[in-house]
Amino acid sequence: MSMAKKTESPKLVTRKHIARKEREEKQIKSALIVTGIVIGLALLLLVYVLVDNFIVQPNKVVAHVGDAEIKAGDFKSNVSYSRLNMLSTINNYAYYAQILGESGSQFKSAGVELIAELNDTELIGENVLNQMIDDQLIRKEAAKRGLTVSDEEVQESMQSSFGFYPMGTKTPTITPTMVNTPTWSSEQFNLINPTETATPEPTSTATPEGWEPTQAATAASETEAVPEETTPTAEPTATEIPTVTPTPTVYTTKLYRKELGNYLDNVKNYGISQQQIEEIFRANLFRTKLMEDVTKDMLPQEEQVWVRHILVDSEDKADELIDNLKNGGDWTALAAENSIDEANKDNGGDLGWIGINDNFVQEFKDAAFALNDPGQISDPVQTTYGWHIIQLVTKATNNINATKFQQNKQVFFDNWLIELRKSRTDIQIEEYWKTITPSKPAVPSSLVEFFFSS
Image (cartoon, rainbow, N blue to C red; front, side, top):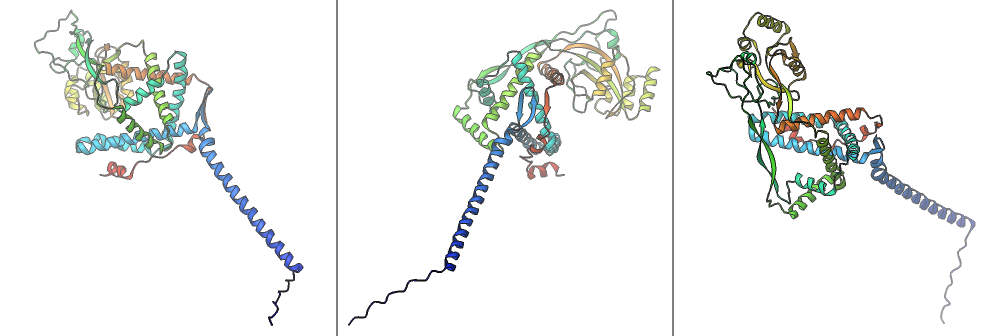
């Protein structure tokens, strides 16, 4: 006889059980809601950060130039681009300093100065922002004059920056341009004995130190006579001005595109896009075209003075020498005995021809150009080098070579641009730029160690 299957009695569900189950369900539901809210807030925060970083902040305005706006994103990219170029220059200085050793000390000094400039983040930001404001002014003025820059010109400029010339490289050829020496009076010749001081060419470029004669001169013969009643004029001499002639290149388009791609990938790491690089090149082309238009009526000439000086370390000493000169003292002898400018004390302190834009300290140039009569001597002139006594040999408007002419055009254009900016009342700069100026890329520690090591 089989046993009957035992049946389970149903569980008794009490109100207590129901209440507990309801609480558990509410807790789970609350937890899910809180989790959803947290996830939602995190997503919202992420979206906000992305929108702020990639849309809002780059489009904030750091400067207004009339109706044009300079955006934060472009400003940051331009600063980073400037820093990259400065780092490239520092690397070049390090390379030349290593190769030249002790004779390359000037490259090491230049590298130290550039590193100091790179470490001043706000200064670089200010310089870049001012340049971007000038670029806007330049574009407005270029449009008024009908000057344009095409996409093809931008690409050609980028190609040339890589040394790539699809139509052939640009090689200088020689085109002679006549440069005439000025006329002289017998009084001017007598100031400087031709056997002691050579006649310099009228195209000088001063050294950074500011005092050494700038041109190797051709000495006059001791037997040459200078008539008292005539004004001799030297034969014209030729100055070489380079022109460009295409020659073949082995640099292929494929290789250029590869190098360009690598470059763009590198600058992308610093937030610089290809479009921004192209706009930087476009701005440079506008600047070049406008400068040529603004300076188109300039002639390859400039007012120059030929002077000599005696440098001493005190005003009292300068006054003493001036009194000596007024009483018939010999300039050449006094320069050799008293001048502390070792570069030229033994040739009467002769500095040759000086142009108004040459690299002499401004106080010295102001005093030199204030002299008008051959033989005229200045009052003592103080500069960072000491106290100068300056004597004018002659003053003339001289022809200048192509390099000097280009330098003068650049100075003229820079001054013109300063005046243009001063005339505008619709330029507004937002202080916001100071908070976003990049400090990267920084100078590698290896370069710092190289330039600042003893």
